[in-house]
Image (tube, rainbow, N blue to C red; front, top):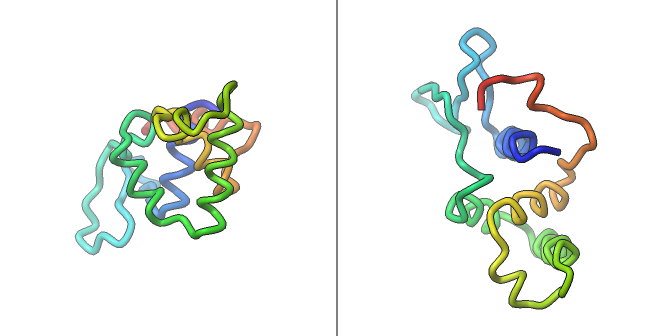
Length: 111
């Protein structure tokens, strides 16, 4: 999956919906129905990812750490603690069962 595919998959998993007419995104649980052209920057922002990490169950946290460790050649705890946003995003997508070998971003030109 590309970083854009991962970002879209995670956003949809978290309840973001895309307006069929405008192609814009609506925040989950947003009664104002405000639309935006931008999804949270899950592929570049550790702050955005931290909010997702806080919502993981204990079992998901364990699996998430395993995926982070597998992405490191050294498998050191230091790498896990200091993993960058793209690495964390990929691990979250795998943890939440969102990872696919197909490309989603070609279906959507609005991130």
